[in-house]
Image (tube, rainbow, N blue to C red):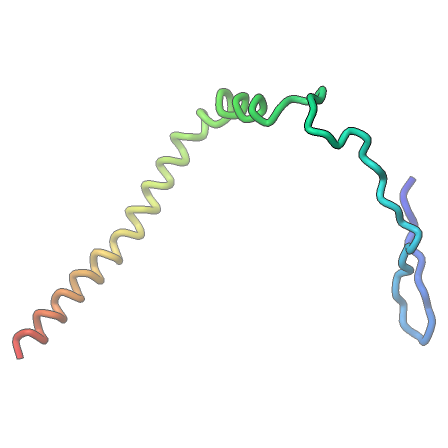
Length: 91
């Protein structure tokens, strides 16, 4: 059932009512024991076995493009800095 929002219209402005009787449900199985759900290791192994391999080549290609794109201005600024140092050394 979808909850309905109730508004207070005191003093001419509308604000939602706050539910002060909210109680957090208790968790019965809080221990670190075994559960029926799959462990994190099993889920991650399944992910890396099936899904991650198909995307690795694409992500590696995009990463290399980004690295090359970022390297061009760094090399250019290093060359400009070396020219600046040489020009100051000539005085």
